[in-house]
Amino acid sequence: MSVADQYEIRPHMKFHSTVKIAEYEPKTATWKVIIEDQRTGRETQKRCRILISAVGALSVPKNCDLPGAENFKGHLFHSAQWDHSFDYKDKEVICVGNGCSATQFVPAMSDGPNKVKKIIQFSRQAHWLSERPNPEYSRFFHFMMRWVPGVQRLYRTYLFLLQERDFAGFHVHNGQKIRSEWTHAAKKYIETNAPAQYRDFLVPDTVIGCKRRVMDTDYLSCLHRENVDLIYNDPIDHIIERGIVTKSGREIGADAIVLANGFETQKPLFPMEIRGQNGQSIADHVSRFQRIQSHLKLIGWQWLEFADGSPEAYFGTCLSGFPNFFILMGPNTLSGHLSVLYTSECQINFVIRLIRPILSGLNRSLLSSLFNTEFPGSVVVTSSAERKDVAAIDDKAKQLIWATGCTSWFIDPDTGRNTIMFPDWQFKFHLRSMLFSWSDFIYQKPPKSLQREVLLTHQHSLRATATGITIIGALFGLSSLLGYHPLSKLDALHQYLSAYI
Image 1 (spheres, rainbow, N blue to C red):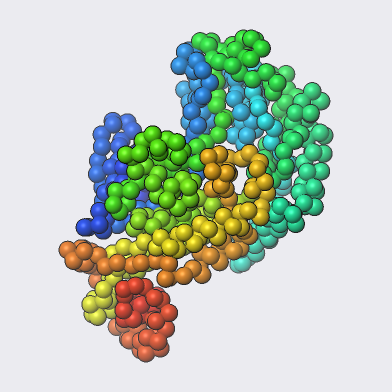
Image 2 (cartoon, rainbow, N blue to C red):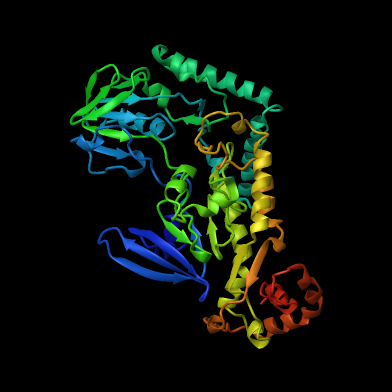
């Protein structure tokens, strides 16, 4: 049974759907979302109180910018939009790029019973490759993980600490020794495993750590195969009907061209159009020059106001002027040494803490009904808090390797700002998701017409109700700690009681 089936996720999913526009309506405190069916093109409208973007930063592939692409008669697609109608067995394939994606599918396509006849990879810049640890776990280890309480969590903590220590290597000055050790190990690994004719190219001349290191998934070993060629000194000039032409004039035929040229990392949420209060939009991130040319458009105005046009967000999650809207894997939430799953979990917990009072109003308990408790309808970060948070992120980022002028998809080429990486230890990211200032947010009451939009009274036992009433005195003093504006202490009290009833 899959995880999705085990936790009954599928009934809550709607596939083959594209969010075109999402607009916030202050009068109803809801988001109006226009969704297009990818199969029929039919558009439908839905409303929601909470809107969360979980598309991530690596979801929009870069287009092919090679001249003549429209003339190619074969299959041309990005690795993230794989054309499953193409059977590459005994075919000639051209790969453009050599990042994480290419180092995975080039070995897979060049080996096995369905291997290609020939795959030629074009690369402009080498990446630092590291050996991928891939241990085999014993039956005893499996037994411990499954049956001994706490062992899984303990092992995960061990792995976390093992990777967390690497952050010290990203500091410009204090991390030089660590980066030297990384460089020595990676260089030795590449020179030991790469074919002799490619070694000079495959050892990068860039500072290690500026780009995320690539774990070697048999990529170096596949370069020894007869059906794999790497071309790094004669780039593609243009595409023709049956292949490509290089700068030197060499023609190379191909049945397919697979793009591994990266993603639009500086265009979060693209191509969705999301409009908050006053109609301001964050659907696209365009350059300052483009904004001057299209000054009547509001696209990107939010980021122009706060970070010179670069993507930014409070804790990489919230934007002022966009109530009840949250971004997962948003600006400055990734790390160069740990998993994005960890940061996403932290963000999810952060969002749940923020929206819990709103959800409580939509799903009332017995006590809240008895006391006629009022709940907020929306929450939004203040502009001052957002500015302060962005300034703090930028200040810390100046101390790290990504601020040395190196080229990376972490950096906005228009502003030179690090928009991707969280510039601090990951344990601090976790603490930040819990220990934030409630004064950074404004909670507002829902419109009167919606204050009783959903009224669900759960059937609680007398014992549970009595328990809740008994602890009222103890909890009433603690309720002042919650500071949900403009909620009363009685409202805060209910949030504590909801954990018991």
